[in-house]
Image (tube, rainbow, N blue to C red):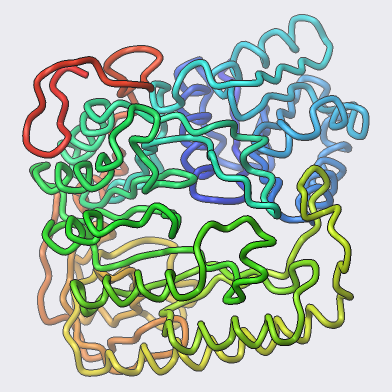
Length: 490
């Protein structure tokens, strides 16, 4: 009898995409997605280790599954991702009912480890120290008919003192341009309208094979892919943000006017302590250049409050940068002490009450700015890619939801039947709230798409491996290059 599975995902977009690969691997091995996740024969946790409460969340969830495992010994539990890479043998010591532990470098081993654990009736723990096969060469079960993740690199060469990711994901490894464009082209051929290029430090792409202009070339090449209407990327690092990337964004029609670029702190003293290689004026200078070329660009960021040694003056400088930057959105975090990072050993760890008070002030300021920026969109016409699951209140309000080209969330009244997730609509914004836009005056235009057809039919893009050669990363072969960075046959 076919065994069923479910994958529970925590953390960043890279983890979301990794979970698509895990699901694809399991289905290729004969498993079926569980109709009721609570009744799955195999439960896979794809974990994150960035925040301090990640450990507690994982072990709490594993504890909740213990009675089900006791009642059904044939049920299997697997733990993968960054926390598995970090904790290794600790997981099976704290939760001995776990069957499989695998790391960030060996996602492809999951089906074999599950089978081995079943055969041996013992936990299987396999953690590799470096990447052997790029995850994008693995099968995938894509979650969306209209939008897809495309990983262009994995790992990170930076040494930010607060971040544990480089030690868990390893050094940056770059995919070959031809392999990336083959995957983008395959998604577009299946009707996907939007791709998001993923990397821990996405605009450092090309450093492994010695081409500092590779990311700008990649953006321009995505502009030549037939049927692809929207290109996004995340997350760039200010250190590597160059004018050629801004020019590529401005001059490539399907690259969206959206930029997510982490600030982390507005204090130069704190940035030095974080080992961030830019300063606040450099960051603001990039935003000025982006807005000069792309006036309607929506810029979002990440900010950490309460880094060790942060003074009230340091925090005031962060507030001032936020005022000047006019972010459309900011993902704000209270500093989380992570064992194994240099910042965890720094003196002057701040009291929780101080961090909380600063955090609330920052959130209040950014909420006001986001509201003002969104109110400025009232009366504008925007194109929305209709999505599913974005509007939690859509059922009660009889609205549908989607994303504008600049990434803003739009809730709209359809006013007619036949609009599906994956379709494109044009609406006029009537109200701007701090976190979304509302358009209740009906739809001005509606374009049915192949993505909408696929969503309606329950179809998803093909999950076949997309690599054109193994291991699928590293320096491209010396072959002819087409316009942009489309390396033929690489």
